[in-house]
Amino acid sequence: MLDLLFYVFSAITLIAALVMVFNPNAVSGAMAMIVSFVGTAALFVLLEAYFLAILQILVYAGAVMVLFLFIIMLLDVDKSEKAFPSDKLTLLGSFVGFALLAVLVASTFSGGHLPEPTLLPVLENPTGTAAGIPFTTSAKSFGYSLFTKYMLPFQVCGFLLLAAMIGVIVVSKKHEQGNS
Amino acid sequence: MSVGLNAFILVAGLLFAIGFLGVILRRNTLVIFMSLELMLNAVNLALVAFSRYNGTMDGNLFVFFIITVAAAEVAVGLAIIVALFRRRQSVMVDNLNALSR
Image (tube, rainbow over all chains, first blue to last red; front, side):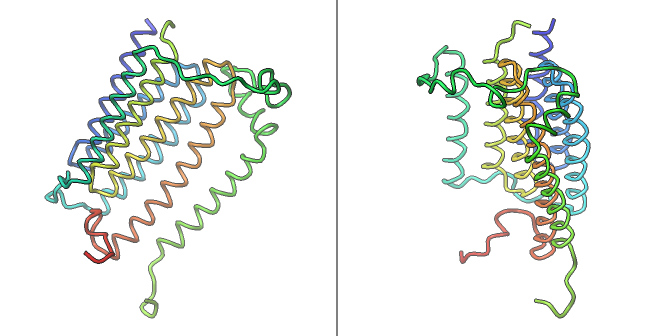
């Protein structure tokens, strides 16, 4: 049953991503992106990361994509412009992209392994904070880890959000007539 | 669940490749930005899969920080795109080229 759910959610996510990339209309692309994010949240639930699944829907699908839709509708993009280019450099780039896809699929199904170098003894049996927090499905372990092991990145992220907020206000301010 | 780690990594890699194709092929700045978010999403999926299959929580916490940073990046990037639109009246990448043709 869970295997079937994995295939269904992966198909939804990938097909929505393809629709987003290849649809000339930007608003339809944003809607497909929301479906893709919800599909990814479903895959998070399958991986027993319930808190992250809700966070994905709240932040990504709920805030980021709504912001995108605001801006897409505000800027009112002219749909008659050519959506896909055809010059040589872009064809080469798309060929590299397809080659990446093909190599990825082939390496997954061929069963090959990446070479495993021998680790230092200190890395073989990590102890203390390097050992990694044991996996739980509760949100309490998130809070515990954020305030003990990952305190510094947590505070830095708070500072980053403040800087982003100030940056957005400064960038989107209309300049007076005197400035260039 | 008998689905192995390989399947999740394949899905994450496919999502990343699709986002990469979006960044390369599209001319609309907003769609390029959305494809960039798709690539970040693919990395999130890979991190959560590895975290689950290794039995640690650190991958999930890293995803927490990636979601935070991606949200801040989207806010600032969209403000820049709006400012660019005010200046150039276009969001197509071809029209935003300031170098000599």
